[in-house]
Length: 325
Picture (spheres, one colour):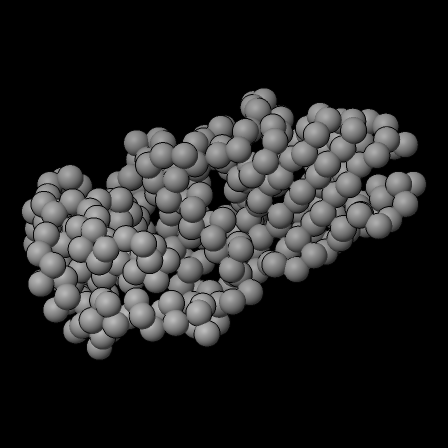
C-alpha cells in the first residue's frame, strides 16, 4: 500500500482541508471532521488495489473527537455501487449506519453500504481502520441476505470471521508484492470469505454459489489442519468427520492442489520443522519433529531429506552458518 496523505509534518491549520481534498478523490467520498479544529490531530491514509477490490487504511491520533460522515448530499453526488467491509485495527470506533449504532473494537468488523448515510467517529486517542471496497455484483451472497447485516457488528476473532480477518489484513500488508494472476486469485478468495462469513452469521450458507461454498470449506479445512499439525492422530477421517463431509469429498477438495490430503499435511509439518530448525537452535531435532506431529525420528529424517535434499542436521548447519561467518 502507498501513502495517500500523512499530516505528520503539516501545520494543524491546514490538515483538515488537505484531508477533505484527499477523501474527495474516493469513489464514495466521506467528509472528515473534528470537533475542535485547533486541537492537535494526525491522520494517515494508505491505499492499495488487489485486482478488483480496493483497500483503504486509516490511522488517526487526536486530542478530541473526530470522524468521517457520508450524508445524503454526498450520496446523491457520488453514489458508488459498492459495499465496504471495515476492520477495526486499533482503538474504539463508533459507527452509526443503517439505523444501527455500534462500537467497533480491535477484532471487530462490519459491512457498510456506501449508498446509505453513515457517521463514524472516535474520541481522544488512537484509532485504526482497514476498509476494502467491492462492487455489489461481486458479493457472493444474494444482496437480500447481505443487506440485513449492513451496519451490524461481526467478530473477526473466531471461526470463519477469523479466517477472513487474517486473510484480508495479510493481503493488505502484501498487496504490492502480488503479480496480476495472484492478485486476481486472492481477490476471488477474499470475496468468497466475505460471502462465507456473512452467510454463516445468517445461517444461509446454502445461498452461496457452489464455487464459493467449496472455497470457504477448503480454507476452513486448511486452517483446521494448521491448528492441529502436532496431533499425530490427525488423519483424513478425523478431518472429514470434523467438517461433516465424507473422506471422498475431502480428497476431491484437495485435487486442484495437485497433492493428497496426507501429502499436504506432511508438507505443512515439514515446513514448520524447517522453520524451527533454523531458529530454535538450542532444541534437539527430535523435539522439533515431535512437536509437529512426527512420531518417528527415522521417518521424519527420510521425509525431510526427500523434501529438501538435506538431512535435518545438515539443513540446520547451513541455516545458521551465515550468522557465524
